[in-house]
Image (cartoon, rainbow, N blue to C red; front, side, top):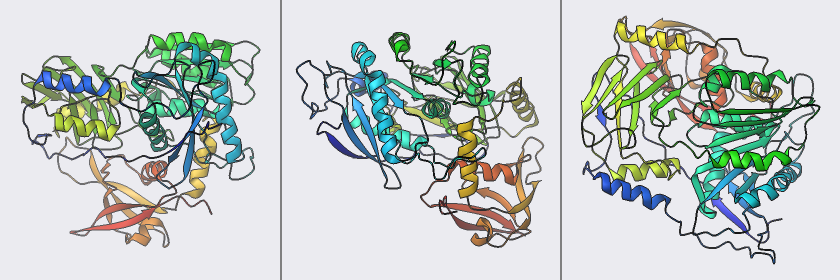
Length: 545
């Protein structure tokens, strides 16, 4: 199937710098602060999305003008290889950019060989309609998303395809094929469809749209709020026997509609868990009218308990905490208004597409003016941002970090924000795909075995900052082995602070979601009496457990 065209791509990433800015100081990012002009930044933007300089494909076109599919071998962070099967349209030309359908197969499969066959099927079902519409189809063979044991009513242990895996796939594809960064669409069948939903809610600035097919849906309103700028086209069979309940996708469509999101829900009578390829030409026509909104003027970052967490950075705002709830609006060409809770500071990435950087910009947080000044454009800073995100379709030449004010009025506004984002109805039963994956994580995650109590660390009535007093901790547990003892007060884990309603269950949940087979060192900060101490724990999933 590879047509002789195998490319080894090792994805590397630059982490976008993050910092906590003590109140009331404000920090502008930038290297030389040279004050690059708007015209220079616009020229830089155009250069990034100009026709690429990629070489022609190694594969030769057939007599009918079509190209054979080929494989890009993508190396993941744990050194495992993940095959990405790619099919370009018959008139593919590397001197122009092409829309991309990232198409994920179902599962979990029983073997890596089955996963490869699943990716081949994804190419096959999209082949005809994608060729006519001029789309690239990229289907990952999720060779590690396999069952680790036989399925029971309660368990089916398997790894999920993680967001960092997805980013590696997109990076590898971008290095090999001339793709349009504003027309990445994610689709999938069954398990792959739920990966599409989860990835888009985690990185809502990455995808132009998603197309879940034969999906279990999603009933958590907080998670779905992150799809405000991600159009959704659902294809579902009324009698699908492979999902927990048809109410799952129906509830998702209901919530999305109530929130005013762009969604098409197509449920077909007397259909099961089967191919919907006859509808793909209509889907592609619909997608053709929906390029990515690169710079929306109003955005939200809503944390949730889904197995794939929302990124700290969403569009042009970044929370300094995993838990930060943020709503941000560019209300005029000179003013940004932010509402935030469970965050100490917010980093704002700015561009002339949002505000006029030739004039002072006001940034208001929870009703208080936290910044008013000009921000220098820096192409050097913008270039680093593009490299960090591997996304030439979004360019931010300026950035500033502002505190969330620690006043009582600010706290009142923060709590009002959280109240507005409370779901109107409780979430439905957890879908099969996530129930099984979450229970697998529970099995493979190292034990914390602590009892804690949240205690206030600051006297201010306008802050919710807290620590977790360790009331009891079991020998042999993760933090005990690192050096934590009963009586210590946890004040930070992996850079994450705690709040008045934090708990060890919450701590375990977000650590578990971010754990992988690759061991990662995490810093554990405690107060022991008047002494501040720091320990290090090695976090990794244990598949032998």
